Image (cartoon, rainbow, N blue to C red; front, side, top):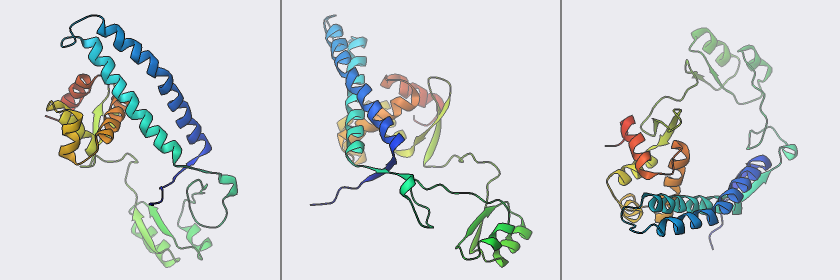
Length: 221
């Protein structure tokens, strides 16, 4: 039997997952009521309230499944119990700014990150550092093929992964979750999880609205 991969997290992160899971479970019966109320209005083919409620139900169930999986695999790390000189999850690291600190830590295996200054490079390497990485002028992650920026419903700019864009493109093409899953070689549950995450990022539970926001950003066609 394959071993289950544990997810390291702090107690605060675990409690946030539990709180989010509790809120989604409490939302379940409200969605069922909304579906029944919308169903009572008649013709479901043009019943926007019904389809919106069903879509939200799918998002909630996918999010619950995702959170339950994470909670079941949680490995809670207590930073107070960490010892040693290695940087691991939950450790607190003190950053020393300046080449002069390399000499103080000559026994450590250091790769220094700093400005592209030839003098600084020579100084830290001669002091015993194993490498020197140039720091970018700004700390903002540059746009890449793996991450795409989209303006959410709130007006804020969020980042979508390449996989999320592919899933949303499938929605824009009119494909079902099953068709999207088959095309991307994913499980339908994974597609639901992606759609739930996209909805949370964009601030909308409406697939059509999510597609519209992505179309405006030019990330799908």
